[in-house]
Image (cartoon, rainbow over all chains, first blue to last red; front, top):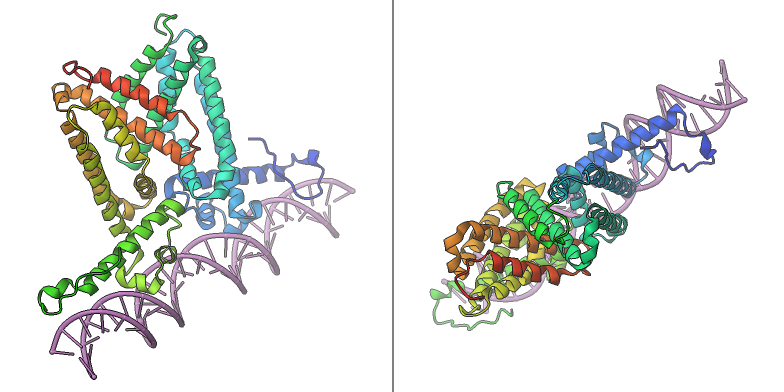
Amino acid sequence: MTPRANRKRSQPDVERSGWQAQKSAATRNLIIEAAIRCFIELGYASTTTTRIARMAGLSRGAMLHHFPSRIDIVRSAVDHLHAKRLNALRNSVASIPADADRVRLGLRAYWKHVNHPMSVAFFELSVAARTDPELEAILSPAQTAFDEAWYQTALELFPEWQSDRKAFDVALELTRYVMEGMAVNIMTHERTRRHEQVVDYLEEQLRALRPPTAANQ
Amino acid sequence: MTPRANRKRSQPDVERSGWQAQKSAATRNLIIEAAIRCFIELGYASTTTTRIARMAGLSRGAMLHHFPSRIDIVRSAVDHLHAKRLNALRNSVASIPADADRVRLGLRAYWKHVNHPMSVAFFELSVAARTDPELEAILSPAQTAFDEAWYQTALELFPEWQSDRKAFDVALELTRYVMEGMAVNIMTHERTRRHEQVVDYLEEQLRALRPPTAANQ
DNA sequence: CCGGTTTCAATCATCTTTGACTTTTTTTAA
DNA sequence: TTAAAAAAAGTCAAAGATGATTGAAACCGG
């Protein structure tokens, strides 16, 4: 994103647009994305600093220059993931026209979202955080912020649903659990199940849960 | 749990399963259950041989006498979990009378099942197996066997549903995904959500999916 | 051009985990 | 009672991971 790096020395903060700063930011990004790829491909526990460095194509020493310790990388990776995830959610919902089949498109968008590699990475972190208080502390704010944003975004996508907030809440939670349950199933088991049928069925149910004002959009 | 057994010294041949063998088996069980507790409390990655031994109240050397290597413990733990899980499923379903509200009781039984510590342990292993081929090879047979047993058990619980196998499949998968999605949510996030409402709603939907032969049981 | 800084690389000591090996204690069978 | 066998405990070296330290190359402002 922005070439902003947390400077520790007594350098004027405004002067941070030189070539060096940009290269530094690029390297930091490279490391963060390598770490995320490690989470996805190797799992959180096997994501060692050595592996991240190799994945990023850097020496371990060079990497530890940008991130003094392992947990610093994790912290930045969580921030990075959170920002991208939030952005992807907003974009995918914003691209749905008001006169479109919002139930269908919204559902498919979320289905795509939970199957995105980014969600796999977040899932890995979430599971690891269950038994790792330090990671939990890092991840928790991002989780709740995303949950909140998800709720708000859904509310904006379906303004007519505000009339029946009870049904709306059930619909949202149901959607969330079905989608995430299926995503987890796909991640851990094989991918040879009839998930699409369940998505279709869920779509039907969501329509039934909606207030009967609009026609069927 | 105590290795107390009746000692008959006048029968040397049948004594093959004597005290020593029993004590050995008890110790093995102790180790296996300690390992499972470690999976639950520390996570799979942090379950080292040292921690298992400490959890079991044994020296590490003693433990490695019974299980030469770490993976051997994992193997036995998976078998142990699988057997107990299968047994619990069968028992809880078998305890449902034919004239009871089978939808409600079956659903609650499964809800209880996915929130059981045993399921947490299995979940930990499943997630770790995603990026660990060796563990995957150990876990996969147990997974598919359990899935198969789950399907069969449900079929036996709802024999009238055989007439509409399509709806039955959707109902089963839906149930599975909602329940597991919620369970994962409870494990990784906080437990302060309105899961019960979703269970109630799911119960309603399952009733609607059933063939309209029986009254409402 | 140069002093100082930033980036990158390499090495080092420490710690943890693992599995093999050895020793001690307990139990079994002759 | 005693010797073999099994269980339990303790010791050891190898491998891997981490963070710190040192050294070298590129870059910037003056």
